[in-house]
Image (cartoon, rainbow, N blue to C red; front, side, top):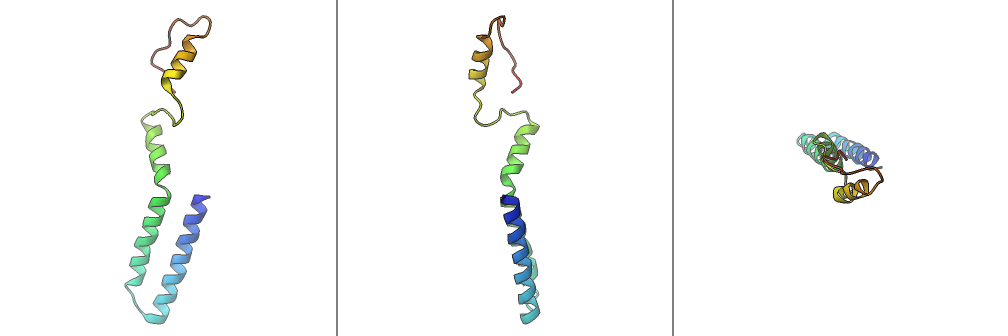
Length: 87
């Protein structure tokens, strides 16, 4: 849903800057609105970037306690130890 919000905000920004440009001939408004839209896109996708970076370095997902997983696995019948877990 956040992606759709970013697209809507960007579209509204383009329409507003185009309208201002047509009626006032303020040519500087276009690059300013473009920078604002770029900032909105960056902020809207920041969490995705962080999650992707964590996945790239094989980080443990949020909400998972690696120690608890290790203890659970070591308590299973037939398991003597659990080392170097890939979670």
